[in-house]
Length: 197
Image (cartoon, rainbow, N blue to C red; front, side, top):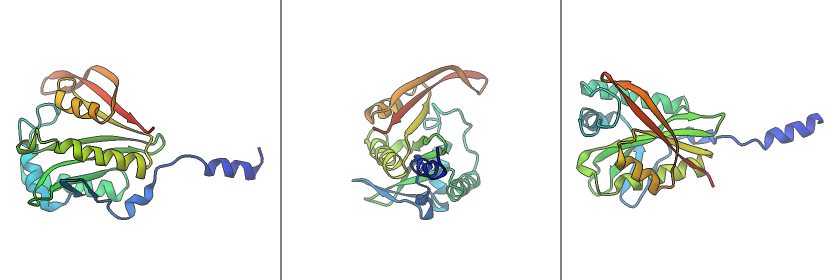
């Protein structure tokens, strides 16, 4: 193959749209603004991260202080600046309250794949706000960021999260037995994935 033909072929290779990292991509749904997580949200992040209900199906210790939440927010900002991930805060249009977080924890550039994760204040469970937020983020990931697939790792007992993922067209791709060791016990982990059509 000649050099000119090789260059043309390389130009056709699919790649992630990294231009979105020039300015934080704010999204909007019927009831929410999805904005960049910032230090103003540290108190709400701390409240969620110390909640036994929120942490029920997540292998992580309860957060110890609001300072820890501020550190986490700063880490999310660094991740965006380094083009490794995107963390949105879900803001209710009606009162401006931050009710949860969601985003791409890790972006796998060579494979056009990202891992999605999030959490929501228990006061807003059951109102279908999570579906609304995740649907917007998934659409952004597949259509604007140009991902080929988005994966979510969940404990099989987390029926709420699995129902949300299945509603949005995620398919169960794997089930790992005793995949996570936390709090002196092993837990299974399932992987659900949505592929670009």
